[in-house]
Length: 147
Image: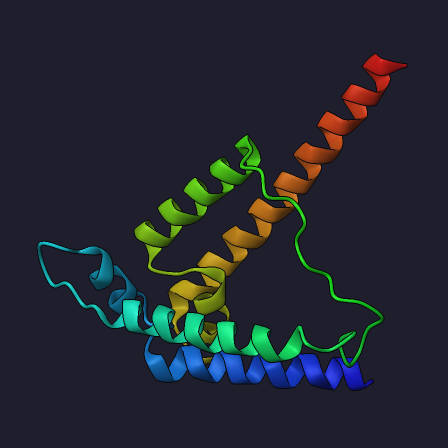
């Protein structure tokens, strides 16, 4: 129960930060990408602030032997750059640039009444389901060929 409440609190703080910073507003995000028009640098300040807070948090948290609600830290170990990483990053960036929403901003936007956020979250959910189905299908085909 403590893990669920902790996740809820973290999600609420994150969502409140996204909402208060204006990053749930797709027009504000799209203006960041419009360098030669109505450029708005505020997204860069939000990202910079997040990086600073994260770096400080990692310094304190990783001094512990283990997380509060788990046996060990689950940190990424891979450092290679492969095609799924590049393709996923490109799709994420293109989608963010076209819609003004990223998953972190779209979820709080649902609660703020942005109608487009519902369409985005629905399409994102469908995309995740399709990607999982494609991955499972490819893995099944590969295992059949190997047998």
